[in-house]
Image 1 (cartoon, rainbow, N blue to C red):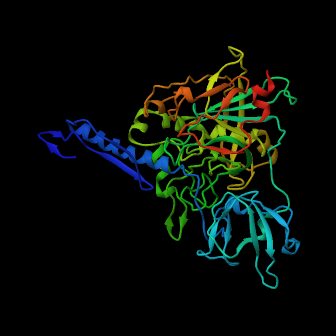
Image 2 (image 1 turned 45 degrees about the horizontal axis):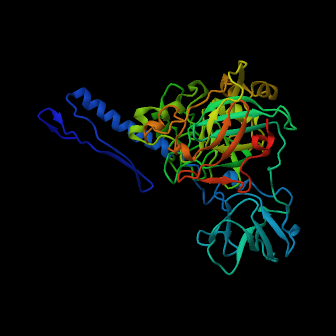
Image 3 (image 1 turned 90 degrees about the horizontal axis):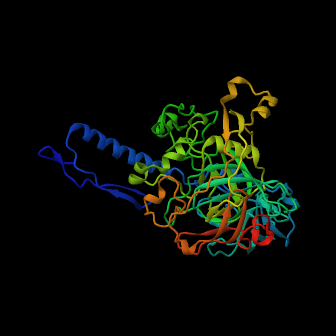
Length: 492
């Protein structure tokens, strides 16, 4: 900024880039005194912080050395549960891949130059060579079925530890809970199936706010029918850009009253080779729910902050200033507050249907009378980065006899069981539709919206995903919705 006769020049351009893509540019109004100069600097600083917050929600990251077959601690743990030894593998037999992101190589060795691509869970291969007489985990395979794009090669190799004899599927899961995320309104709702024979409507047992992917081609949240595959406590990306919220070997995270900037400070990052490594501490919060299939690495997870901070870090993504100077939402993941994600971890087992839609909302049964409900939790240090590790239910934690010095936080979560419709707003502009709850985060025209989501009953009627440039469909490609939520099938 340049001063001219006590005034700063009008056009002060603030611009930041991420992944070689420009995300915002804005003009500041004339600044007439020292206090305004100070405030402008604060605005610039806040813009950079919020942009980093957005950037930190990328749900990927790989550790190439520690986890050579997937680059991820979580994915590396997804070994076959039935084949423990190489001599159990049969030449010429068809097998299925047991994890996502499995590296397929052009030679039977681990190095950085022979990776031809990545296979995903349930991709099909046939074993063509057991490579006997050599101490190696690799077998030669021919790929029969995958959606992955692989580099051409004369032969392909994978670790036998990630081969299954049968496909893995939670598609026909028969548990009593399911989740519907309405991406349009940034709301997550959990329903209980009160009649497992589908003879009655469902009961909404939780409603919570989300921050979904920013409105760009690379970051929008996909719709589709998915299943929860597993939970990870204190998840950390494989590359360590976003260190886990808690780890016994890391510094304690910032205190609840420290504010957003503290979560970026180097002193809270783990030390690697004498240097503090990481861009943002605790970006994935307390728990992360992984889903499949065809999910584009878009998980449902918590955020920075403590339970004491409630929903403040989610609500900040929907404020005017945050959206004026930055893109503060996510890179495709569905982000909620830490108390909510801890409650979801307690409530939802692997296999739970996660349905992501972009829909108009309404009530089917009019005004609802809902019960007040609270859930008491104790967040512990146990099972950091462990798959399906410790839950935070207070009664369960006390039964396990966790020592006091292993407790991080205790609190009470007020469970919102009242269904509140978020109205669809077709006319809001690009910034306006991101503020508060406008019911149309990606600016879809009403003429492209098909059907109705009855939020009180968990039933969906006349629905199809909008055919629109902003909507990408993942999940099961042959399943729009499970029958138990499709009221065109149920007729309730």
